[in-house]
Image (tube, rainbow, N blue to C red; front, side, top):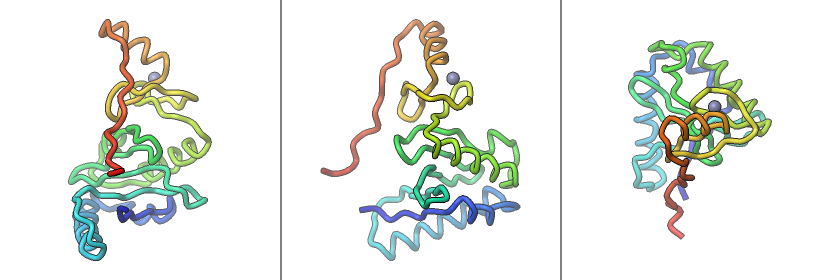
Length: 158
Ligand SMILES: [Zn+2]
């Protein structure tokens, strides 16, 4: 069993105005305390954002200059916050992006990491990359290859 911190989408508003470096330093220190308190040995951070029902929908990783986002169910990449807003500060717009992502995922929509549109179905083409049918067709034409479905390694230990 792994420890996990789950933020509500509304508590994420506390990030607004803070730099990615500040958020990284804070969450790195918090994760160290969590590891010590629980006896958990892995360095991998486990932070998530929940919908209004309390269900984790987005997993996030804090880096010195960015925050990476993945779906909590399936581990598909949703991109990185700073790449969308080109700011060193977590802004109101960044929070709005998380709010929109949470709502879309809760509605059962999937995010194409190539064209950045919300669609009903996506296909995996790399460890965390998944794209809509149109982008998969474009990818096949560009590369002249078929898209192999890639699954994350089983780390459950069972
Ligand atoms: Zn697409």
